[in-house]
Length: 108
Image (cartoon, rainbow, N blue to C red; front, side, top):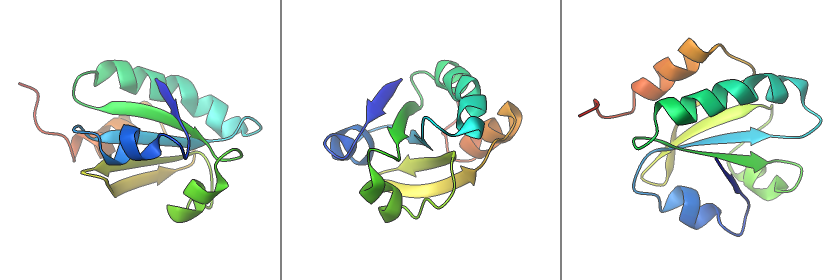
C-alpha cells in the first residue's frame, strides 16, 4: 500500500488507470487504526483491479479540504480522477467491499 501526499497525489490517484481507494487517516485516530487491517485486506483481495493508498490528513490538510473530508477515516473511491463514492467512519469489510464492487468491472 502506497502512502500519498500532495506531491504525488496527481500521479498516484488522479492519473491512475485503475480505480483508486484513498484512505484518509491520521495517526491519533482510533477508528482509523481499527479500519487499517480491513483496508489492507481489501488491497490484497482486489490486487490488480484496485489500487489502495493512504493519505495522512494531518500532513495534507489541503487535500483533505479539497475532497471535503470532515471526518476520518474517510475512504474515498476515485475513478478516472474523480471521487465516485465514499464511506466515513469504521465499517465492516463486507460493507467496504460492497461499495467497491459497485464500481469495479467484473473479474476476468
